[in-house]
Amino acid sequence: MSRPRVSPWLLYGALAALVLLVLVLAPFAGIRTIPLRAVFADGGLPLEHRIFWQMRVPRVLTAFIAGAALSLSGMCFQGLFRNVLATPFTLGVSGGASLGVAIYVRFGVSVGIIGVSGMSTAAFLGALCAIALVYGLTRLRGNSSTAVMLLAGVAVSAFFSSLILFVQYLGDANDMFRVMRWLMGGLDAVDYPTLGALAALCLVTTAVVISQVEALNLLAVGEDFAASRGVNRERSKLLFFFCVSLLVGGVVAICGPIGFVGMVCPHICRLLFGANHRVLAPASVLFGGAFLVICDTFGRSVVAPVEIPVGVITSLVGGPFFLWLLIHHDV
Image 1 (cartoon, one colour):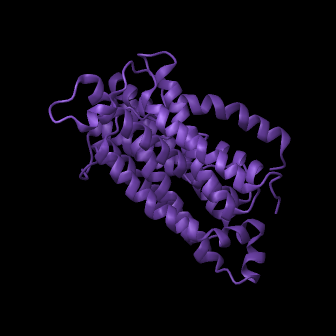
Image 2 (cartoon, rainbow, N blue to C red):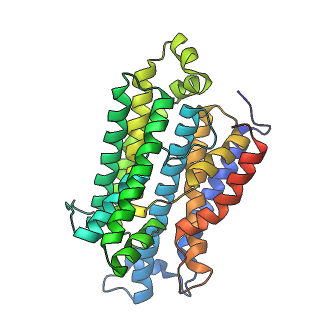
């Protein structure tokens, strides 16, 4: 495995400083006063202070958690499929979540969950359907080879995309706009209950993924090599599949399908830290979180008071990076 040229501890220190700086400064972007005293206020908070503590702070924290989750998910799929162009949406989770939102908007079909909106609930249920369908198609072949899993994900994504277009065709202009706006990704409708639900899901799945990074190291070399070193290939691949898919499904349900974070951030970290997933996983978490916070802060500040959806910003950054990656790297 390739090794970084600079000490990883020095890189980790710089990355931790970047994360701390971003988390501290991002909530203050675009405000005129510093509302720190509002934390200790006994009465009602002034408008700017309420905006800061009830909207800005949970938004920044949600962006960090979502970016960290997408980056870690991309790292896992890139290692599992041994391809740096793999993304968290490779296996159709985004398509299933998008179909759930389209059905919710058009027909109002949803099951509520405490602390989570109806649209987010519909998106998460759609993501679970996609996970179940890809897993079922994979098991029909009697094994969970990465090639079959990848092809099943592509097929499910294409099928769901057709269903989304069909549902949109049945709706009116307002329904189409709501679905299209959700597909752009965004963090403009988050609060503390939503943040808590996302954080709980991401904490559990991330802990499981990070505990299995040694198996991911071996699988990234090759499935036969991993088996020769005592790794249960089927169990490990299914574990990564379900954990990463749940992780992505939770993020997409809350924030929409924010593209390219899961491809760009892990690869940048791989160039800096090397390919050892024990080192790469924490770096991807930190860098992915900071990256999405920066993109969201830029999107809501550059043409304020109008907001650019964060998914648009990440795509503008990720598109050229994708082309560079495609041209200069063997994939």
